[in-house]
Length: 95
Image (cartoon, rainbow, N blue to C red; front, side, top):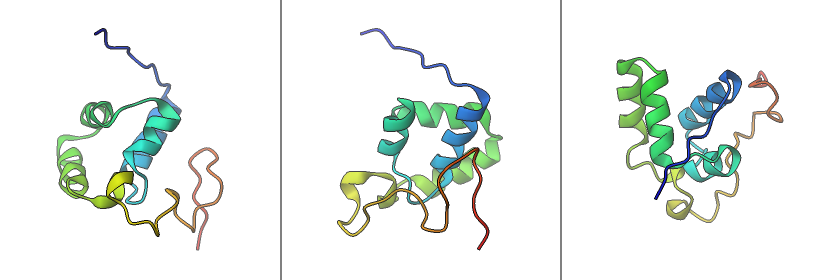
């Protein structure tokens, strides 16, 4: 089986990293939007982040139910923070 490399521009990489850090954004949403599987997101994070930041992220994400749609409760039906306006150039609205 041949592995297909997905090419992302700098803006897309920034968005993937931002989505990976968000607690409520499941890996499935990243896959739907960018075509990256969970393992590919982990590899991207490892490559793009400082070692200490990557370690913090991995410790935070491992075992977190909200990062996997199947493990989420039925009451969680979105992956975007309610305080975040429509995603546009990674802008997050102020409270």
